[in-house]
Length: 110
Image (cartoon, rainbow, N blue to C red; front, side):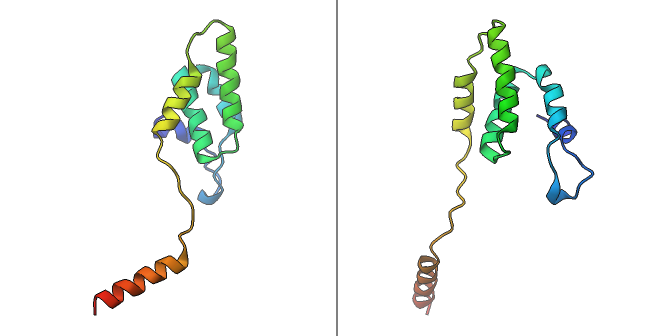
């Protein structure tokens, strides 16, 4: 997805911290997206935690396509793309350990 395409889904009338995806615009455009793009949107939704609304819309479209005879293996494509994403780690370091390392470095530099 290019920046221009992504910008279409953003409501830019809000301050940056309140930017939200325009779900109506997403739903309107989903049928035009390729299978790969739909899968990538699902991965992005899971990865960034948009609230699973996008995932549901995309999965519904993929299910419709499968029922219509599309043989694209979206489950394995989603797994592949998701496996390529770097792990997000929001754990806070142990402050005691950080301080002990800083003290040790200071002692070694004297």
